[in-house]
Every structure is written in C-alpha cells, then in structure tokens.
Image 1 (cartoon, rainbow, N blue to C red):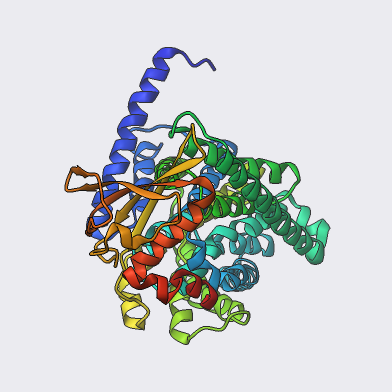
Image 2: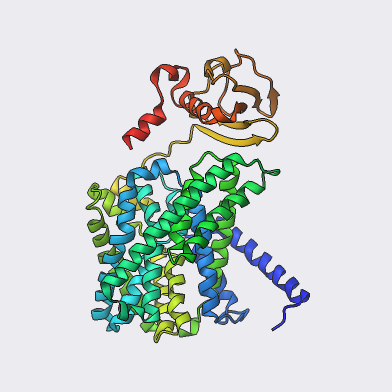
Length: 507
C-alpha cells in the first residue's frame, strides 16, 4: 500500500479537524461534568466502521503499539508534573497499591467473574489483570483539580504511575500462554524483576539526565523540553532493552527530572502537558475506532456491569484495605482512595494485547472492558468531588505563593530567575533589600502592571509582581531557597528559619 502526498493532505486535514474538535470537547466536558476521555472515545466510535464516516480500523497490533507509546508519554508527563515533596509521604501506600493491591484485585475479579459469569479461568484471570490498573491520565487530570490533601493525591498518583508495569507483564504472559508454563512463583518473580529493574534504570537515567541538563547551555529555550522528554524516553528504551519495565523506568526518570532544578522547568512542564493531551486524544480516538458497535449486545453489557460491580464494590476496597497495612490511614481516607480508583485508557489498551495475540474470546473481552470503562467512568469521575466532601477529605485549595522559572546565561556561569509573586505570598510588602539574597545575586528588574521598574533597596514588592533575579549558578539553589523562605514567612524568614526544610522533615 502506497501513501502519496494527496493522501497526506487528507490525513492532515482530517487529523487537524478531529484534534481541534477534541480540544474543544475538553471545555464542553468540563462544563457538564463529564470526563473528557468519554468524548474522545465517542469521536472514535463516530469515525469508526459503525458510525456515519465508516473508517475501518481493525489492526490490533498497531493499536497495541500506539497505545503503549501514548501511555509512555502520559506517564512521562505525570512524572514531570508531580511534586515529589507532596508524594513522598504516601509513596509507600502507592507502591503497595501498585503491587499487592493489583494482585488482590486480579484474584477477586477473576474469582468473581468465573463463578458469576461462567468465564473460563484463563479469561477470568486475564479480565482481572486488564481491569485492575488505574489510569494515569484520568488520575492526573481529575485528582489535581480537586482540593485534596497530599497524602491522598500522592498515594493515588504513585499508584497510577507504577501499576501499569506489573499488569502489562501479567497480561502479556497470560496472552502468550507463558503463564501456564512458568507457574505462579516464576511469574511473580518476573513481575518483581521488571518493576525493580525498570525503577533502577529510571533512577540512573533521571539522575544522569538532570546532571547533564544543569551543565549544558542549549542555544534555544525550546530545546530544553525536547531534551528532557528524550531523556525520559531513553529510560523507557533502555529498560525495554534489558527486558525490564519501560513504564516504571520512564515514570521514575520523569519524576526525578521534574523535581530537579533544571533550566526552563515551567516551560518543560507546559510542553509535556500539551504533548500528553495530544497523546490522550489520539489514544482514545484510536480505541474508539477499534470498537465494533455491532458486537455489543445485551450479554456484553451484563458482563461489563457485573465485572465493574465486582471491581468497584469488592475488589478495589479490599485491595486498598490490604495495601494499607504498610501505611495505615483513616477509614475515610481509605474509602476515598477506594472510590477514586479511576479506570480509563489503560484497561482498554491492555485489552489489545490478547487481541493482537489472537487469544480465543479476545474480541468479547475487549468489548466488555470498553463498556465497563465507559459506564464506571460516568459513575465515579463526576461523583468524586461530592464523595470527597461527604467523607470530609476535601479542603480549600491553597494557591502557590511563588513560581520560579530559570534560564541559563550562556556567557557567564549564572542563571536568570523569573519569579512571580502570588496573591498569598508574604513577599508582598517586603522591600528588595529585606530579601537578603546571597552575595552576587540581585533583583535586576521588577515588572508591575506591564511597566518595567529598575529596583532600589527600598523598592517595595507587591503581589502580582514579576521579578528578574540574576544569581551565580553555584548559588542558584540557595537563592531560590531564600526567596521561598521570604514568600512563606515574610521579612522575618531569617529568624523563623527554613519552612520548606521543616516540611520535608515532617514528611
């Protein structure tokens, strides 16, 4: 099959229109309280063979490959935009949910669907493995919009970032028939090896990448986001080459890079968010194309509803309860974590693995998972704010007091920091001289209401000001730390100490 320039033109036109429609759907879905993934899936179904456009797409292997690529991008964005200081206190629970919790969930769903629906054990276990992981895209996009304490968001984000790795291995082993030959212990050993090895590869690539990025001054600011994303994908590829988990590697590497003091960090995060949105749109539209609505019948819907009920009401609460042994929490916190086990693209992508391997009953399995994700996303996603309020775990969002963006100055060993003073910052009313920055660092400009001011020591800073601070590169961390001290404690920060350090000690 050839692909000429005219077909390329048509592809570009259709792709641009569909992407714009999907972007506008984000606003529509937010207005009516629906998760945007459902709109994307609907677009794919409308474009597919069962819709008015009738675009045929039945290549499960291609869907499998593209789906894994999109998930890698989404995990990279999740790591780059996650604040480690907020996650650290709950990472034990998140890791337990991603391993022990997944095992409990697979077992419960498998037993439930085998006895309630009469599925063969192989398909029942496969269905349990496919449905068990939470979706990183759904968790990162939905939970970050809710006013939740960091102990909850940290655990849920860590779980969604790490639970893809064991489930991908498990679904792959079952789909290829290797599970029957390997046995339970060997299969568990493979999963543990892939998860640990992938995490170690991610640590090495993340630390090495951060070290390189801090010391290489690139000629254009637009190259920094590309370089950081390529470093994260280096971890993915290196882990895959070592037969380890690429998903674990890319998430850990991105988490380290996103929490390192890198040039143009805010620009990098914004770029990653845009690429992740594009990956989500393409992923969900593709999965909608892969569905054949004509195959959906009453039995499929009943199987999907029963599977989702077992997963939501029995498997998820039990897996959370067992996982919490490593990090006990209040009952209301565990109840919210149970309800917030959001499923999205990940189960549908995992369902393409048995499709691509030609497993008997894989078509029915894909349809069941698709319907279950749609129904239970409609149930859990929009109700999360209400559940958070009823359980008393929501609190008022506290705006960030200070945003810092850094850019290297190529000809001298210095960095230019752009500092934005938020409305809640205690830097409001502080004089420039009272900042007491390290020797060699200085506030060079103040931008206020569109006007540029050259500050003096007695210049009073105001909320909404943008400051340009020049600091020697070796003093950058000290300078940023001092600015954050003043932002949180005002001019008395010198005597009150470093609040960020106290927070780290408590975490």
